[in-house]
Image (cartoon, rainbow, N blue to C red; front, side, top):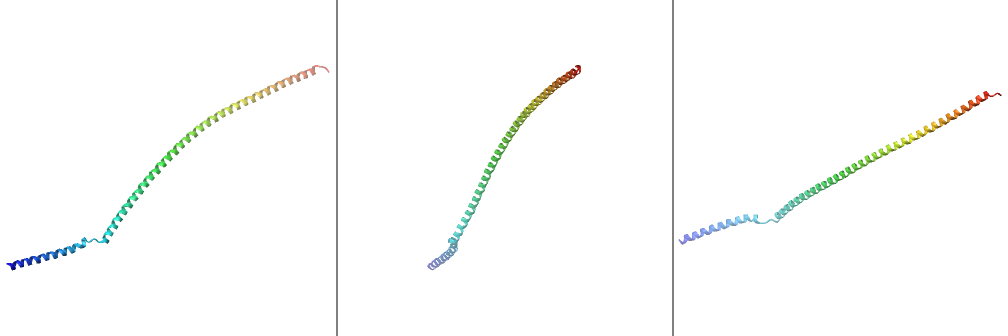
Amino acid sequence: MPKQAGKLKGGIFIMNQKRQAKETVEQAEEQPEQVKDPLADLLSQAQNAYTAYIQAQREVAKGYKQREEQTEQVYKEAEQKANNACNATTEKALGSREKAEQQAEELSNKAREKANEVYQANVRQALDARNEAIDQAWKARKENTEKDWKIFQGEQGEPK
């Protein structure tokens, strides 16, 4: 039995060696996976950095877009305020113009009435002066005519 035991022991030993060799080969095959490749790490870091850069670029673009929209909104509000102020000023100016035109029309009417009154007064005065002149001329004519008739009649009635 001792021989068989030795054989057994030897068979186990060989089996152990085979198993160890197999494990060593498996470990050797696994080692390339476990060994870190510095180039792969650098490539991975570069990829991560590039991804972060692209993400940051998107965020910056998003920020610029938001700023552009805010600036556009501020511009539109300023434009609306300017339009409102312009409209209000234009309406006020229109009201002022209409009021000035109305006042000018009233003054023009008053001036026209005054001019008409002065005209009428001047016409009356001219007519009165004319009538007075005509009356005086008529009286003078009448007196002269009467004088002339008296002289004419007196000369005819008196012998010479």
